[in-house]
Image 1 (cartoon, rainbow over the protein chains, first blue to last red):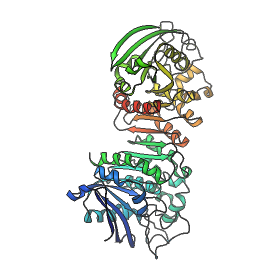
Image 2: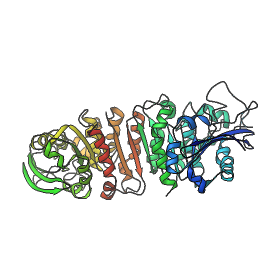
Image 3: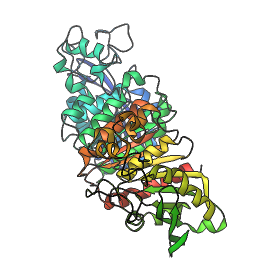
Image 4: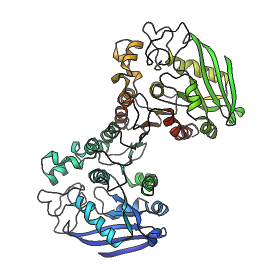
Length: 276
Length: 276
């Protein structure tokens, strides 16, 4: 692991690091904010999974999350959204290939050799964080935006006991029924739709739900609402009697201004679970 | 109008009043909490509609709402849930007849002569309040529990521009598809289901929605979940992109302990709309 940069921020440190990922077969970069409390021992961690076209950097510089994480004494990790490098397959479309890993383990050519974002987020990166930093892996929460909201929800439900709390901003909520989903799940996983189910938050909510609190925010003026399908996840949450809140925020769109407006409430939500 | 009782409470006054209702053709009783600010001029008002078997009294003495309304400077009105008196029709079942008005104008015998709870709440009682008390009818919000949540939502959507905000605790959310609804709507309104639609919050949400914020709380251990159908309303809210929050509160049941736990947040929610 190599340090790309470390900046003092909100009494703690905002770092960027690269490491060779065995899982993805390439070098990967991530951002990590450690609050001041990490000097004294392991702190809880909140994962922030980003959306289509993003790298580790977008949320790190635009979501305004560090101020609130510092107040709460929580670390933030900002992973990349796909494998990277010249020998990694890509596609001309912005929503397939690099920047569009969809948090799955691809099995289909040409994606199967590098696109293992599920295992990267579920196994390799947390192990690295636990080894290298003052992170308490017994206290993890997860959130994300758009494709990252999809990732946060499916990882939280797919790894029972791992995360104490999950939230999402404008998640891709029902990808098996959306053009943001069917194309990618087909390309990465093949045409057997039964394999797709664990990567669909609505289907996972119907099947198992989440053993902890859930918070979803969605903007009413989001330009991608027809692709995101919030109503499907809301119905599934309430039909399951899933502990949690689904909020439709009037006038907000899909941008980081939406995320930065509500990130304080999300961090408070996770802090309550991580410090209880 | 006659004063039944007035008690000093939280710096204001909790009153109980009776009046002859021309709409219901009987004497009706209601509770009204006026905060201290009402001495100096009209204050905003929050309607609290109660559930099956309740009178004006249950929420008034069990919901713990006055403390928070006093802080917010908001009046609370607690209407009864049906017409009353020896010449008013009734049924042996707890969920039809007295204590079970369902906030409709009945058209069918034997109910049609007295059961006009829609007009009572929509027209007669607000006019009386505006004449007799320091209530600002330009600033009204509405909430309710169970059958009263159904009433709050359907009145709010059925009277555009009347209420600035609506909330509900464990509302009967889709009565046209429930045994809490089909029996009563059939008895009160007859078998033409097209007439029922304005008395179904899910159908009204699909048809028009509400021009203001909506807050719904539902307990995950509510013993009546199969009758309440929260998932139908949640789906309809998010499909419409209705401004608002739908919250599933883990471990809470259908009792007033659920209501009294979350009434402070509901009053804050209405206060924000009524004082903006």
